[in-house]
Structure formats: C-alpha cells, structure tokens
Image (cartoon, rainbow over all chains, first blue to last red; front, side, top):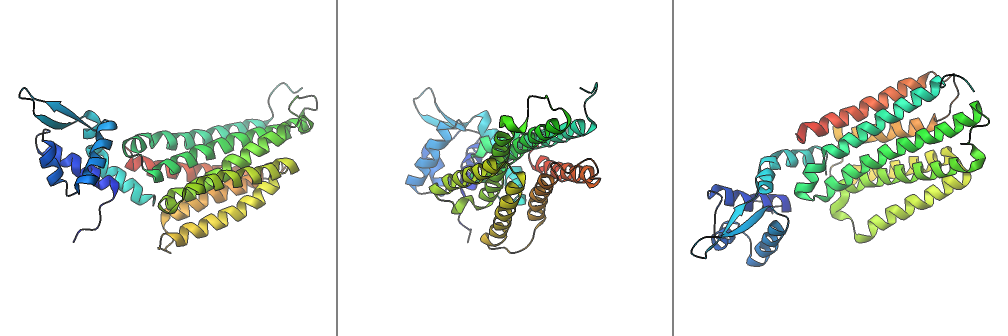
Length: 91
Length: 216
C-alpha cells in the first residue's frame, strides 16, 4: 500500500494527470484520477489556480477544461530535482 | 595615515566578501525551488544562509572598528562611538538566527506558530547582552551553547541518529563560524587565521556545489 503522499507529491500527481491527458482535462475526471477526496481536491485545485500552475479554459461549447501553465510544466520538470534536494539536505 | 590599506584589512575585506557572495549564491540558487513549492524547509534553509552571509559582513565591520581603533586613532569608527556595539548586536542577531533557521529547516513540521517568535526573541536577547558587554567573546560562548543544542536536536529529533554528510557539513559551517568569531581580533602573529578562513570558504563552497547539483 502506498504511503500517504506529501503536499509536493499530491501537486505533482495532479499536474501529471493534466499533462498526460494532452494538457486538457475536465475538472471531474481530474478529481477522480487524483485519488483525493472532493474536499481536499478543491483545496489543492484552488491553490494551483491561484498560484498560476493551472488555468481553466472554456471551449466553444461552453465546457470547462483545465490546462497547465508554463509554471505548471516547470514544476513537473523540476519536481525530481527538488525532491532530491529536500532529501539530500534533510529539509 | 598610511598611504596604503593595512594588509589585514584587505584580507578581512576579501574574506568577508567571499563568504557573503557564497552565502548569497546559495540563497539565490534555491529561489526557484522555493517559489515553485513554497516548501517551509527550503524557506528556512535559504534564509539561514542569507543571515549567515550578513553575519560575515557585520563581522568584517566589527573587525574594521577594532583595526581602525588600533591603527588610526583619528578614524571616526571608534569603539567609543558605539559603532562596535551596533555591529556586535547585528552580527550576533543575524548569526544566532541563522543557526535557529538551519535548525528550523530540518524541524519545520514540528514547529508551532510560537517557535519563530521564540527564535527571534532569543536571538534579540542574546544580542542585547553581547552588545551591552561589547564583547564578541560573549557571542562566541552563547552561540557555542546554541549550536550544541541545535546539533543535538537535529541529530535526534528526526528519528535518525546517524551522522550524515549533511549534518557534518552543517556542523562544519557553524563550527568554523565560531572559530572565526574566536579569532576576530587575534593580533598580527596569529598564523592559523588565514588557514581557518580558507577552510571556512571551502566548506561553504562545498555546500554551494551540493545545492547547485539539485537546483539546475
């Protein structure tokens, strides 16, 4: 059984799901694939939007999609290094 | 007034500048990691080194006041102008906080809201005592105790009693700081001082290189 994910890992997993869906996914499937409760997902999702990691876009039929911003891609690219930095310096 | 600066002054200036630049480089190097994650451990880690760099600048200014009192009697930066007290206060405050912040960087999950306040208050009180007595030796004694407590807390609080390379590096960084504090004004015959200064710079350079490895 997986250990409880820390905050950085949860954020990474949410962003990875979006990226793996061609950088475009509806909020409901994102909630389902993130393995979080609805309450916790809403907290993380709000944080990601407010910090500019993801943004919501609306297509021509009025449907909402979530996509990564440059900052979101940057987080995914740097995640492994940052985790190793945290481990190396016991932070 | 001599036509050229004293050699001691130039060496101290270069040493302080190198130490500050290395500390600031560590601070800058970790900016992106912190801004992306807002990780509290990274925050305390980088701020610790910024404070540590400022301590070296204050240490240089204190050294300058001592040197100027000995070498240039008319120089405005004299002990009796109270400047040395200000520099001792700031040096003590920044360096004590740097030790606390490095401790916080490892123990941030266990910190309460009051911990930060306690850290700042303790650093301020210790620094007032040091400034009041105008003695860097007081700072040395107090910080030696703080360092021992911090080292013991870091060693035991995370459950692992293993002495890792990181813990050894931390101890070296602050151990050498204390040694530099001890020899802040040892007189011209103290031959070991340049060796200790080079050792301090090398240890900090190692920290910078290790940080750089994970923050490309």
